[in-house]
View 1 (cartoon, rainbow, N blue to C red):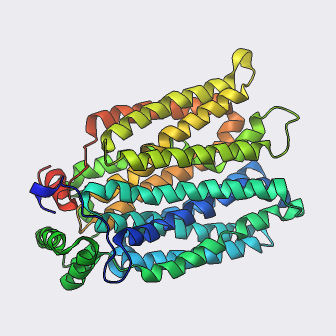
View 2 (cartoon, one colour):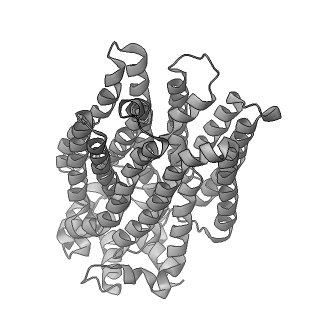
View 3 (cartoon, rainbow, N blue to C red):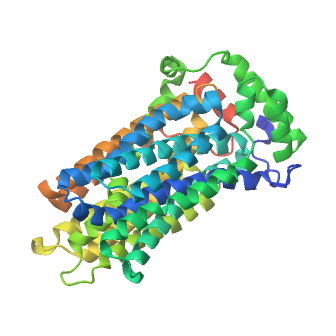
Amino acid sequence: MSANNAHEPARPFLPGKSGMSPLGTILIVALSGFLVGFDGSLFTGAVVFVKGRFELTSFEVGWAVVSHTIAATVAIFMAGPLADRLGRRTVLRLAAIVFAASALAACVASSFTILIGARMLSGLGVGAVLVSAPMYIAEISPPALRGRMVTFNQLFIVFGIFLAFSSNFLIVKFTDLPPDSYWRWMLGLGALPALAYLFALFAVPESPRWHAMHGRFEAARRILTRAHGSEFAEAELTEVRASVAHQNGDRDANLRDLWVPQLRGVLAIGLIVAVLQQITGINSVLAYATVIFQRVVAEGAAADASFMQTLFIGLVNLVFTVLALLLIDRVGRRPLFLYGTGGMAVFLLVAAWGFHGADGVMSPSWVLAGLLGFVASFAVSLGPGMWVLFSEIFPNRVRGMAISFVGLVNSSVCTVVQLLFPWQMERFGGASTFLIYAVFALIGLALLVKLLPETRGRSLEQLEESLVRHS
């Protein structure tokens, strides 16, 4: 889309010659996020029973959680270059197969070692999806709707989280299964959506920009024409051709390409957002939610009370991600990031106060209020916004490598934070742990105020021109 029509209303998502609308294509790709949320969050409930089944120490519980993230970290670094070489759609298909295999392996695991192997296999699928899906969606969406479309992927992630929390609660509350088999049913359910998604991907074409990056301009033209019409397709291809020619796209990008002077500004922004999203503890809260609430619920409460409060976390996450989807292309990325990060800091302080309580007595209601507010603030800002920003600020030729690199940093920070969380809670207590998270949120807010650009409503090539070539 050219500069003079970047802010015009986008052409409606009408069905193409293949019978499927581009919106349908985007929704299928975004459903990969459901696999990430559902498969990963089933373990939030299962870990309570896995701990007893295998008689795990606190460190082993942390390792069971973080092994998944470590594998995702490795996959994130590999997924971008693989998506550039093999195609975004091919990587998503491989991820669906991996998710199904990991769920079946976890369900029948006879030892802690086998369970860890299944968790790491699932992590490989997570890393592949987190990079490939937002990249695909950003590359096929019109600028006016790109933020909303990429946010669909995060929406399905949190919907998967909510459904996983719900299924865990239902298994514990309403089934007559033996308690020692709860965790097997919880983890085995992940195979069903993975197999369904694999078949759905056969209706999805490859990314038009990936075709263009490999000199297949006619294929790119056909896909863009079906999606948005011939006028849009020609305008997009003109900009893509210029971008590819400018970057000498005859070789694959490598890490050295990210350190050229023109990219330092956008790389710094990406790294700050990548670290901030995880160092404030969101994945510790989601991964250990049931364990946290077991610690703070009133003595004598029903055994499923912690599962119910975890379900509240998932519901709030879902509702506020929907709100982000509605707002991100209306108010822009920058306002959501700033207000959301500020809200995260405030509610982390509330949670810290709840853990400390009056006269040192823990207050479960303040802890729950603080965590719900923290998750809500994250879900409307850094949760969906980070991947939208990553898909926009990096140039076409290095986008896969750049997203893999900042995603690697993001996942590495997540690994450290999740691994340390059980130790922090035991050593320092909840008040100090969440106070530390709040301080990181305030530091991140100050950096975002100074550095974060607005990317709403401009084509990927226009953003490349303003953020990279003129940096």
